[in-house]
Image (cartoon, rainbow, N blue to C red; front, top):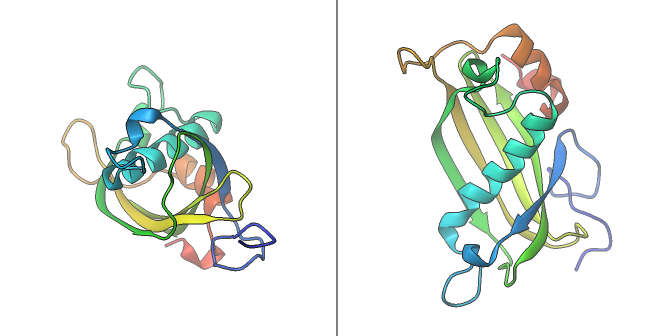
Length: 158
């Protein structure tokens, strides 16, 4: 166990990004009593939805900005370290490694509630999609600005 909470770069030095509390539900557990490996996408999705909803960009088709946050997952990879063995709260630390013209690359870490245990870490690439054509579309200036607090490095934009 670590004495200080882990951060995005694997050290205890603070990095940009946000940490979101996420509940692990009983149905997230498999027959062996651990979080099923297919649930990491949903758990990360819960953290993303909470962050962006609070930031004013909900994933709600009825919301005025919905077309701007219409993204599809292009790639997802997770490395597991310590299994989660019960329902309850965990923390998901998320940040942007890259903010491109039509895509974003998120980094994430699944941590214990106290931040001392690294359960999993990974990355996810998402492409902004035009809802009418279902083709890649540029990320607009307002959303780019809203991504600022998540950028891991200022050079990650571009």
